[in-house]
Image (cartoon, rainbow, N blue to C red; front, top):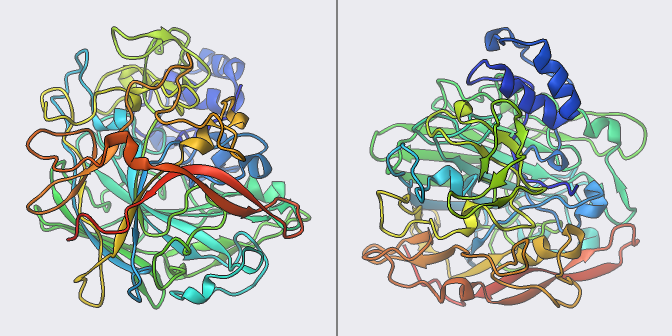
Length: 554
């Protein structure tokens, strides 16, 4: 069975409801079906309040347990494929500060009525999260060759072999209505929340060495370790965000200080550096409420000391600063499959329906997958499945495992926003970023990019040859070898100009850039070869279309 990434099934604790089947889901994810069955046999009810506040080993990105940035070379980092589908909109600017200071205007999507009917879709079915990103300094992260990283500086644009350590921030927004964090993705039944996440990669590609395995087991994310903190009204983390000190109850359970936002609200999103790290600020222009989070050592953000040998595991308090001054095709994360720095992305391919008795046998779908009227036998990606009773609001049986390589979940059906608000959500809407001292300078240009070649590659059982580009296609192929029914795309509105994602919306869409053709041609990137002593290798990980202009200035 292929190991697939991009899913939050974390803790052996149920924060939403205390029923035995959900505990079995979590035990199954960690120990297998036999252990889950044995656990159920001796368990009638669970008191969530009695659960411990901290656990031992933490799940890793390769345990399909986190929404992690996709790496270029998962076979070296994880020994098998770990990834997911993230079409992105990249923004470029030569203005000093554009790589570390930006502001967006965001309108949160709304959902149809909460009663499921055939053909009706919800945001949690289409995406696990959408996010705004920026590249960051982390001197304990890949490629582990130099001990310094000058914040907010294009001096970090160097040769790959001498590149400063790099991490990637995603300011993630989570849709409401389904299984609650940290078991699923939703923070609440009806409202959105957001979290500041920072992914680092503890790998020396030149020597071909990773962080020691003992430490990987102790930290959130493993070799691709993660700092995680919800955006709160006080600006103080609920619990430690550091990879080793992170707690499922506290750090991971969204509590009363979290900034909750209603669907349809208009949010001003600001990301900028400070003396003690990147600060993200959200202001809800409808409710007047605000929230923030600063990636500072004083807030508990931390590096993991790179120790490839032995068993040491040291968490180092750290102020995470943006890495670059500007944003261009050269200001990249040198270990990521994508080429982004300043970017927006929508994470696809998680939810799929399951026609199986998940209340009796949770965890894996043993029946049919797919929308009513368009079902097929469940396959290897129908994992981390929950009965309808686990949902905070929308009562459907479903699975949250990555839809790759089948590309057969809701994300790849024509149920994206299309103006039919009774059946489909409204689109996420966001402005191009603004930079400058007063946030009044537009970015020069943008680019569309999708990492489909990385997902379609042979290490996931596909036909895409990342060296030559042969067999890499868009739209992607399903399990049956035919193109996916639908692949979402970016488009713009007018007066004011905003980006939307998904489908054409009558009366709203003004330019869809050729729909799926907007992602352009195969795009080759260069990386350090694992264990190659500094040698490089070039691969097709993306389709990319650099527009050369910003067609939607703010």
